[in-house]
Length: 288
Image (tube, rainbow, N blue to C red):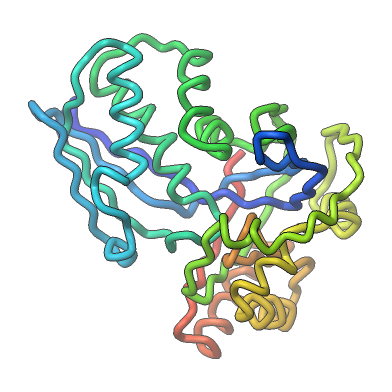
């Protein structure tokens, strides 16, 4: 690979918890959440090209929208307009994450696209300006642009970095049933959680899990109405040895289990792949 050719990973996002605290007049819901990123994700290759050429491959390529509706394309258009340049580059997306699955695959692709095109086009390193563009692309895109653990509130735009997270080991499971976020919010009954104060103090893995059991994902019931198989996924995760916590991420249908060690997570993956071969199952570790 030449100097001008490079690859970026678009990591999966996990909401360790997700509280919905209200709704703005413009229809956006107010949230409080801890978002973390893991070493599982889509891979995007960038190379110079006179025009924009976008190719999609991988196990979930067939579920992607048409090129002009793809968030990578939209990110390129937005970035080019902001900096007064023309859209160009050869981009190959290896779509390894399920689509519409609650782990911000499209948002993470979009954030990686902003970084990748900026590098490909030799744009200046202007993080504040890039974050404003990320906000225009979607509520999760700014957090995905950071790509490290954050406490988020508002509509997701107010963020605080959490630099002292302990090592965390997960198993991600999706029943391979697309669960569109608008449908889930359409079923949400507006049972809002009271806002909480979050300190971000340093905690061990065991302290995190103990605290997380006091929180929840407020979209779980609504997501189960859209995709009843989520209940089966959570039961299966809870049935694996040494699972400390099992929960839905985002609007679903991906769920996660938390384990003390990477070895315990791998053991759970092997069990789930044997018992549920049709599901997407992946071990994952926190990116700090």
